Image (tube, rainbow, N blue to C red; front, side):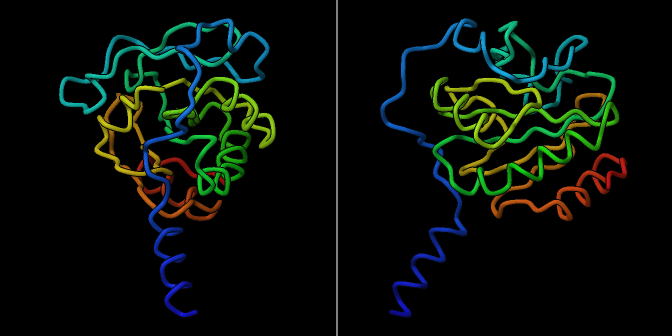
Length: 193
């Protein structure tokens, strides 16, 4: 029994592998998000800094009703918290309420952007609706952001400065409100309560 509990604990702490669901739908178009409740993605000025790991990421489809393509990691004029998640990842769902509360309390001081990873559009929208996620999200079925950040499993969170620099990547254990707020304060210099 102890061995079974130990194995279960290791699997839980390791997070979700990045393989996502096996039966993904065809590549979505902006119509897949026409009725979504996501906020608009932050406007970027230019491209990611030359030394940013996100520079190689192609523009991704914003999951708001506009369905525009956005450049991840480009300067937005304010700090950004990128939350890599998938509907297929239970630890991602566990930490999502902390990001919902951060987005609500941070106002325009910090943008929270979800990076839906290795998922399909209908599952992503359904999971977001269930978790009451309204902050901006981009769709990254090809896992470009995850790969660029050197992340092996979800959940993961990147903290990006107003200038577009990736200043920290948190990997592993799901974030709580207290830990997320402390990381925002430590790495982005913004106090959120």
